[in-house]
Amino acid sequence: MSTLVVTGYASLDYVMGLSGQIAGDRTTIADHRDPDAWPRLGGCPAYVAMAAANAGETAYAVTWIGGGADGKFYTNQLYDNDVRIDGVAMLDGRPTPSAVLAYQADGTCACLFDPALAGEERLNQAQRDLIRASTHLCISVGPPHLMQEILSLRPDGARLYCVLKSDLNCFTPAVLEALSPQADVIFCNASERSLIGKVGSSAIVVETNGPNGVRVCGQGIDTVVPVSAVDARDTTGAGDTLAGAYIAAEMSGQTNPVAAATTGIEEVAALLRQRLSRRRL
Image (tube, rainbow, N blue to C red; front, side):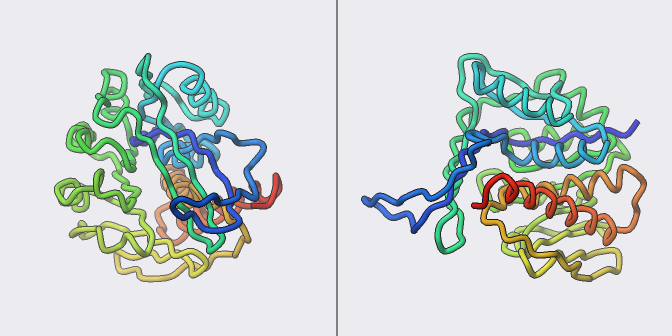
């Protein structure tokens, strides 16, 4: 059986839209927050795994949370979205990571992330066993001190994916130097593309560029797949969702990277339309 394991930071997200821009020593008025998601399940592993699970694949999140109500909320949300929670490590007495995502009037998003557990994360035996048994392993932004260990646990033959973020605390030059040549598929946005080091000869790079489409490069391919614009300000998790749906397509037997990217684009559009249907941000 094919199994996907996604590693990285957990987060409970507090998302709001602002009527202006954030500035020091000044109040900025929020003009929206999602009434059904305060907080909302967040973090790269959750979005990637949920998209894969939504496609009917077996997906595990390997991540770290605190105890108490927030930790229980996080695991319940994963479970309700058909993501396996065996790889979620709970650190009793510690807070769960969280983020405030403020969408400003100019279209930019200010992200204030509290990693809460930064530096305390360790792979437990259950997490190691899941990684060792995976057929598809996806590394997203997470504890930098565990990156080398995670890579070392990857089983022979397992497909390796990386969801890149412009977080140089996590994706250090040393981590990227080890990860880039091994990855079968790397997901990034246009501003993150320069972070990728030398990739393997058969690697695929999937580069998102907002309404300008998704560029798929590698294996003799260099094409831009168009996207259908969805007028949503709250796009958090879009790239991770694309990655999860892309991986799920490969797990189901899809071998065409452009077709897999198209599947990912469709899943992102569905996510954004769902948010709009609740309340426009």
